[in-house]
Length: 251
Image (cartoon, rainbow, N blue to C red):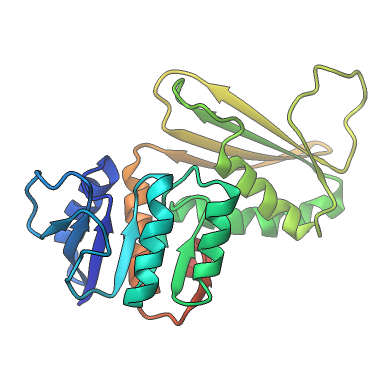
């Protein structure tokens, strides 16, 4: 049985993961970490990982950016692997995540969805086949009207996966309204749409002569990220220290 600590147990994702693990025969949620300890769970809740005295194998982190570094320091002292799912980390915090991976196992990905990470693998293969046949590449992402950043981090992750297959030869183009020129070959167009309550849609279009090939992913709820996080925790629990991604989980 894999023993999991949920860092950020009182958040929406914390509640979702708690329910998932309760129905999972391979995992057990043995403790939660949250500043609010008034909510009742089937496991003890502590205000910090430092104060947690429950033995575990791995931590799933869905919290807030300022809480990540203190949590990682405690994970090092307790020799715990961590699935870092918190978004919005700055460069300094991301650097500490990578530094921590020299001491304990860390899994850190731009998107925790199994489908999105499979998509990233598929677009690499498509890129290798189609760019040599003169196909252009465009990415369209759609999200709800409350999302603050554009393009999405997932769209950039997909673009980076494509560019990795191209030896980083292509430039990213976010806006074509400022100049009147034909589309250069060595670019990836990235376009953001915002509206309504769209959870998340990502579309990669390979457009060639008389032929269009598309790869699409539609997120219908945020629970897909919880499913990915639980699968990541299972994978990470048996790994040595180092940096891992969702790409490692789906291989």
